[in-house]
Length: 398
Ligand SMILES: Cc1ncc(COP(=O)(O)O)c(C=O)c1O
Image (cartoon, rainbow, N blue to C red; front, side, top):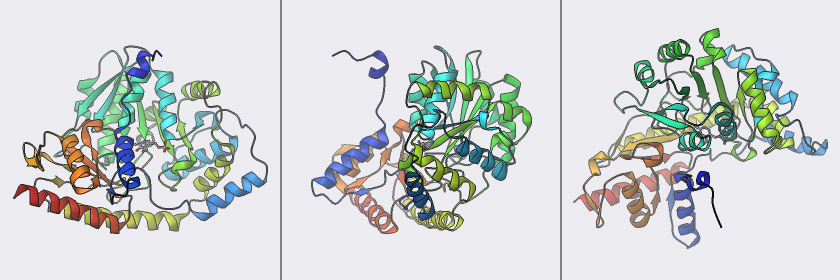
């Protein structure tokens, strides 16, 4: 059977691939510690779950408008004003089946063949794949660890061509945890406005922040607001990854196009997930969120400390999200258990096979000399997993 060129061009998500291999090893009875998770290991707060049950009991089991309920769009507007002082109307909001889906739809409605989308690297794996699926070309800007994995306005400006349609900003970042300062965002906004480039601001990790403050680029001034689409969702902040509710906010014409596209693909996001999401946005379970953030911070500090004690590996302290992005350049060229390490892929493979620890190689994030470790897993597993990596590397380097 024939597959389309489009399908043949897809690179399956490396995060999911390593996860699948680790799960298979666990199923085979092996004791594997996984650092691949991209979701909080906390339960959805009870009040939100209860509201989903109430919604079902109210019989909210039919279709809603394809672009989401007015109630949830109004809750998104309320959240934007409360958190960022940004005023939007419901016709500037579309509810999608997760933030990933909002991004997918967005690239579909703004990109034509040959268009370019600027993506600072390291980047979340799906941006580049989605840009390619929309027929456009991802243009990567290499950031450095020394610069905190943050792109400068000058780098951004240098990458703009007549075909550039958008810039993807992700702060706090997956995989690096980097958080842009207000001054850095101001400089980037100035370039975007001068060159009329749409800014796609993926703010999904905005609440998971341990240092610095989150600033939405759209809140800086009316000019950049008009040129920004904010992407967000309930998945990470409220431990609601499986509920599949995300949203895009901004220019009414783009938002309408996403709704129209959605009306021919998924139709509405799950009906009874919408009113609990509205509740979460209007009345965030502050205690639960604070507890989760404190726990993530504790784990992050522990991980950064231990990783920097492992020979050949180092990492900076990520300011947000729940990942440590570790530099393994000190292991390049080394023989570990009979395998010469050329990049993060080799190291991830040997770690899984010889130390029973699953980490995600940096190649899919545009950073082959790195590995990503999620700390959305228990402290006990983190301690055990890091101890295994340390022991393995130390014994192999002897
Ligand atoms: C940077 C980034 N954006 C978007 C998403 C997607 O979130 P959702 O679960 O709402 O689709 C993720 C999930 O891993 C992410 O890391």
